[in-house]
Image (cartoon, rainbow, N blue to C red):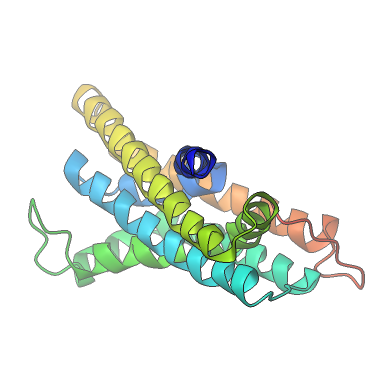
Length: 226
């Protein structure tokens, strides 16, 4: 029991570390740069984490409990979805479409309320991001915990750590942006452009890596869950 509790604690902190993966931070930054307020930014991080945990749990539980095997091409396709999403987020951010969507569909956004659009967007992005890491997390858990039900419970602990980590990250980003915007004119607009370029560039890099280096677009795909 003591060793199992130690594994759960480790899983929580591994989930927090997982939140700091570059693709996660880049994607969430494209949202937070358009969002005022540290509390709202933290809530966006929580919503992203909930979406991410949902996918990790569904796919991971299927692998652990139902012994589902993911073919290399399917695994690479799930990872490619993250690259394509980063490209789309970058383009929307650079063209101002994200701002238009926010103004058009956010509804009555108050200090305590994000509005419908700002609520569903991080959830959806988190769900897509969960596709890329779910298989790796599940396989790691299976190699560590022999009991499948305990292993499935570990996924939730890991997800809780990811939620906590992303909440801290988004809060820290918002604090930094608020401080910088109070010191420099036009900082928010510059950061919006920078985050859009970074998101699009990193998405193109991931897509090329997955499509050609890992072989998704070739006849011999090679996939190692990570």
